[in-house]
Every structure is written in C-alpha cells, then in structure tokens.
Image 1 (spheres, rainbow, N blue to C red):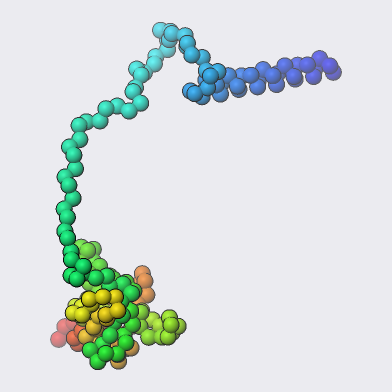
Image 2: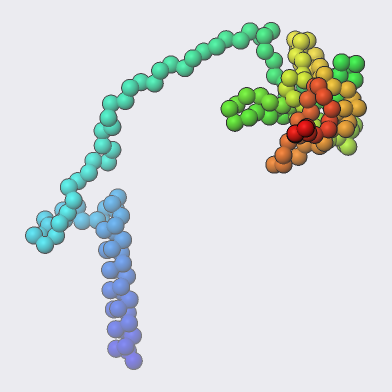
Length: 179
C-alpha cells in the first residue's frame, strides 16, 4: 500500500514538472525558458527568423483635407427645429433627416401632433416642401408648404418600412400608373 502511494506521488510530481517545463518553453517571457537552445540537427528544419515588424513600403503622405468655411449666419442645424405652416400653425418638430444612397437629402421626419410627446406621430415630408428663409437663430421656425389637414391625413412613419413622403403639391392619393 505504501509503495503504491509512493508511485502515485512520483507520477504526479513527474506530470507536474513536465507540465511546468512545457509551459515555460511556450512562455517566451518566462525566465525558466532555456536561453541557449541546442543547435538544430540535420533532421530538424527551422524557418529563418522574421523581424517583428517588417519595414513597410514607403507611404506617400495623405493630401491635406479640403476646408470650407461657412459663416455663422449662413448655416444652421435643423434637428429639433420647430416647423410651422404658411398659416402659422404649429406642425411639429424635425426629428430626423432622410437621405438616399447617394447622400442627397430627400425628406424630413416631423414629430407631429400630441401634447408634450403624448399622442404624437411621425410623418415624412419632402425636403423641397420646407422653407428655411427665416432661421437666423434656434427660436426661428421652418415653414412647411402643407396645411394642417394634409399633414393630419398623412400616413405615420415607421422605421424599416416603406416610406411615404408627403409632397408640397398634389394630393395624398397614390400616383396612378397608366391611362
């Protein structure tokens, strides 16, 4: 019985030391790793040492970015801006801008109706139906070429569904193709 325990103890000690040596050889930063490895024999082939960061081909410096200066009076943000009708009725606020794949602005999403965000819904209006003539500061509103009745009848905008854009001219009826 005692001999059996001794053999188990020796086997465990041997396995532990073998695992520690294998770990030390794989750990390059370990002080236990063999600093002077034996030279490779004829049967062993090793790859030539590779520098950690090979020199990159000479890169040309990037050209400087173009710079455009827009005067403070010439441009203003539109998100959150109040939208009013030509009859000075409150139409809501612009909450998003829709662009096409080419990056051209196509429409604005307006949060319309409700009181303090309760009962409101989002509609999409054509960008060309908006007029930005008097937007000198944040308190100025944007004018929409639609009546409150037209906007009320517009379908609600829901993300990831086909977008119905309400234009300034025409009716809310779908366009009829053919004769």
